[in-house]
Picture 1 (cartoon, rainbow, N blue to C red):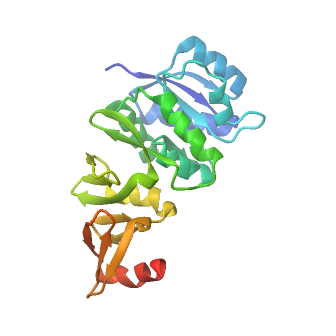
Picture 2: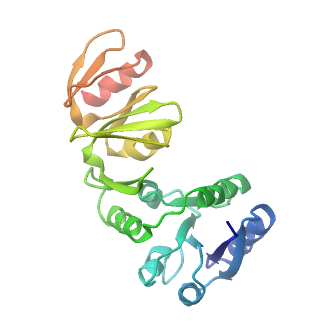
Picture 3: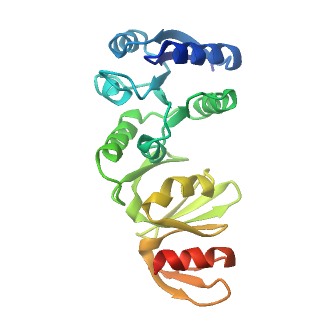
Length: 248
């Protein structure tokens, strides 16, 4: 595979130059074809040059990164969002499976992001952007969708259809309301970070459950929970007190 052609967009010149310098110095698989401050100029450059990846600042005056994307017709490039703030948009980016970098951008985080781009090229950017738009526009509810990469491609699931997720080494097995399950190459802690705001709780080192699907708590040393699909899951002793407080 050749180098990935990249366009960088950030209204703040020091941030733009900093990202450009780090990509040149530490990411040899990236070829920068443009580094642009004005979103209007970036739209034209994208349509003319067809980049493989867009590094896009979220916060820009007049036209932020999300608004800029709405004005681009052919969204056939990967997107890595950059932001100076760890704010509400981060949650939406996580469940939409978009990569993001928080400024000041660390070299290791940047290299990890580029490596992910090289390993996985998504062909469903418009669908992922639609999930992101929905998750940004609505108040946070379990009707939000989560984007999950599987062996078949990228799939979209409503969060309220997930009953539980179980860890298995470097994999996670997701159990759904309709009794089907899938195995994905994503760590349980990554799902925990994304789903805790949606009433999920990690009751055990290997188990993350949707609190909305608890049928009964069974008393014991740590105890167990019976879920609505009749799965019985152990509660670890160290999680018991916090868990009981959450469901009381």
